[in-house]
Amino acid sequence: PGSSWNIFLDPISASQVVSSGVSLVFMLSNAEDMITVNETDARYIPKDCPADQRSYLIGFYENFGPSGGQTMSEVRYWDPSAAVLMTQMLPTFGQGLANVCPDMRLTNVLVNLENGEQYGWTEESNFGAAARVCLAANVSDFKSTYYTGSCRCPRGCSNLQ
Figure 1: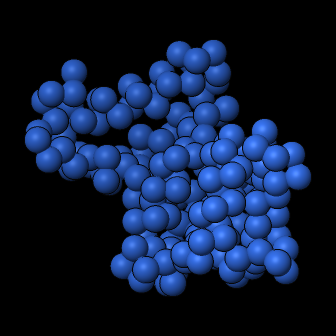
Figure 2: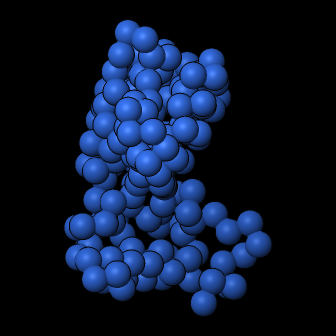
């Protein structure tokens, strides 16, 4: 399937997790790359989102890329997409469906360690551990879920300025 930054940087630990026998769910970088930041993202922020929180969220996504020398469309929701996938799968202990991932497949995965601890990547292999792998993302579902969750301010939204 490829390499995520986490597996690339610490292949030994990643290999230990993959071979541990725990139930695995991966969202491939290809699926995460489908979810780009763009100027229309405000339409996914719920209408009842507190004004301060809405302003904060819009300012964040509009300025995150440019502050690092990138355009908005070069920025991806990598970590948030994994978090949304996880929260959608928690009620079924990783065995059910997730709206954010319309193309989930069962395969066997291992961490290739041919370069030792320097860097590694995941690949499909008959010798690998069983894993559910998300191959495509539902962008609308992700953004709706992400921004709905981001509008919750358990301690109030006024402290975000």
